[in-house]
Amino acid sequence: MIIKAAALGCALLLSKLEGQEVAPQPGTQQVGESATDNSTEQGRQGEGQPQTSSPTRSGSDLTGLLTPEEPRPSLRYDQPILCTRLPPTQEVPSGEYRMQCDPVTRRCLIAPSHELDGDGVEIDRPLLRTSDCERAEASANVRVQEGYRFVPAIAESPPGWYRDEQGRVMQFNFDLHRRIYLGGAWAPLFRGGEGLTRDRVRVDFGIQAEIPGGDEDQRLNRITLLETELYLGEPSLDIALLRYDFSVERKVPLFRITTFFGEPRRFDIGLNLGAWMEALHQETIERGDSELSLLTWAAVHGTLDLWHSQDLVSYVRLRAGPAIERDRTHGLNTLVPTAALEGDLTLDMDGFHHLFFAAEGEKVLLADTVEGRPQSPERLKIRAGYELILLAINDQPVSLVVDGRGTWRNDIPRVAAKWEWSANAGLRVSLWAPARRNAPLASAR
Image (cartoon, rainbow, N blue to C red; front, side):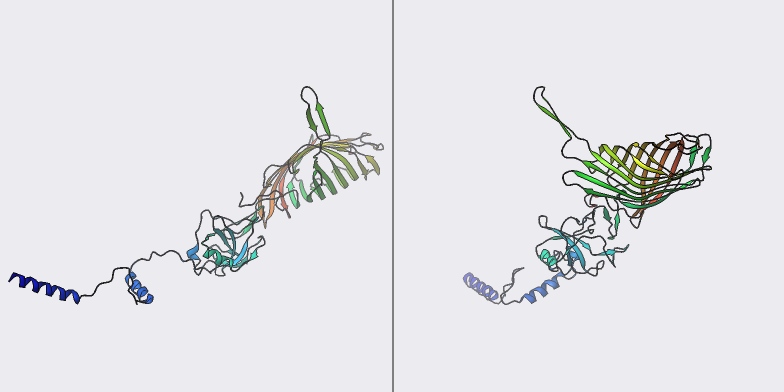
């Protein structure tokens, strides 16, 4: 009886297993099942659940490819740049970019080719003062496929210029030795025994240029045109048509001194001698009822740099030599030897701070006797000043100029020789002042 019951149970169990289907394992695809059905099923299973897929690398969505950095980097002006088109975004609908890639870090800096408004949206104004770029339409897609990172950046700017995050460029480095300037200053005058003259002002004008040169030796040529100072209140005029000088750093020393006390030793002594020349310098002075008009036809001086900077722009030097002068008031031609100690110092890399000083003595020789003054008159002049750039208007610097001057002379007939002191303070606009020759890149700073 027991054996019959066991046999009946086994038969029922086998019949049940034969009618049951084998369920597929999760994540496996049955033979004959299409990829479309599989993706549809995956989409159904993902409804209402967050997606965690990685950013696309197809290049059709620029936003998904960007990896911002803080602070925002800048393209380098001194390295190659590509102009390319990338997928448009809400901020840059044109898709026009400037791109600079590093194959080592697989990183591409991209900057819009147009300026942005205050909200960071592209406007129809191309970037100014950019470097040349190579047009490469397919380069961006290639780098996308190669897995490069795209970093939003600021476009490049030339040395001495800075570009903000809107793409606007501005100058931060100025060469005040290469400019056209126009200025004015309050210039009160104090004369011993006569009190202070307050209603006196000065108008300045001039054109300055510096030109490097020299084949064997380093040389810096300086040219000044129409340097003018016009005083109102107590009228006087000082204008020089042309002035030229140069500084030099000689590679071969003037003297080579060798000593033989023990081991031979050599000492190099160099003299950095230059030249200073001036043509057609007019000076007109009024003191009470007396007037003196002097015209320097030409002056040729030698210079000795006691010190100069590596780029020769700043210097402290001695200057001496003769000048041929015409006393137009008395119809005399005279010889005027001059000796001076002078300096011009640029105190910072960006050219914002300038210090200048001079002490000069002149002696008038070969002059006929003029009633009311000595046979050989003398002149002494002292000057020291400081110029500071305050701001720039359309990248033209506006500077504050303050200086003090002292003059002693006895060449004005019937005017007693005494020291005259003046303090001058005013503003000066430089209509052309490019970046200094050694100006750094903003990105390097």
